[in-house]
Amino acid sequence: MRTFLRLLICIAGFSAFSSTYAAEPAEIRAQLNAQHASILSSEMAAKIIQLNVQEGERFKQGDLLVAFNCAEQQAQLKKAQAVVQAAEKTYEVNTRLTKLNSMSPLELEMAAAEVAKAKADIALMGAVLQKCTIAAPFSGRVAERLVQRYQYVKAGDPILDILDDSQLEVTVLVPSSWLMWLKPGYEFKVFLEETQREYPAKVKMLGARIDAVSQSIKITGVITGKSDGLLAGMSGRAIFAAESAKHD
Image 1 (cartoon, rainbow, N blue to C red):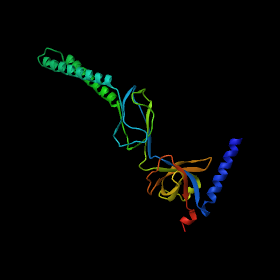
Image 2 (cartoon, rainbow, N blue to C red):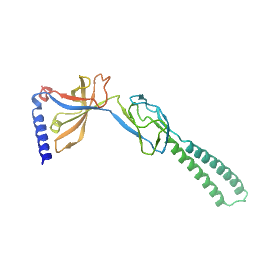
Image 3 (tube, rainbow, N blue to C red):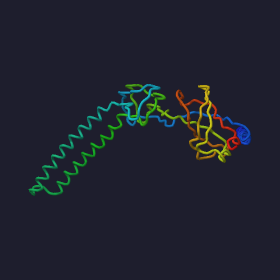
């Protein structure tokens, strides 16, 4: 019952806020988020031998971030390469013997199959070795380092929390009734508590779903002015000018 009453109060407040919006500017809670963010995980069970970034450090796309000890896998690759060489030699000999009618075509086909099998093993080991390093999928910064160098990790263990802060996005939850006039490109302002400054912004995209309970929709905007020193997670207020004033 208490939950139901809280929902009613929330809906009533949001509706009243939406209806009075046309008369005066509106301010809604907003937060900065990274455009791209990811938690990089290990794809194999192994010991970390390189961990090239610290928390807060910047990196470029393609930079080597993590390397694992893959001595065993590299040895298996060399073994597979030796097997291929032996299989190819056998196939060459069998080919000459077949031309001399000293070996059946079936035996030659079996030798060819052994070559193909050995090459498939090399391809498999190559795929495994690709998991021995983790390169940066995009340029950005390390938000959190979740492991230490020389630590043994299992497949699926998180290693680095990274984000791209080259263009921070502004996330705002607005009344769904604003969809009558709020469109991509609409300009507004963002006041951030951490910097005590106001920044120009514009709507980048509208959410794909309206919350039926609160009658609200999430919108995403971008800071259009100078944004040096801003960090993901900063919060404040999105300031929307009076809708009537925008159309005067």
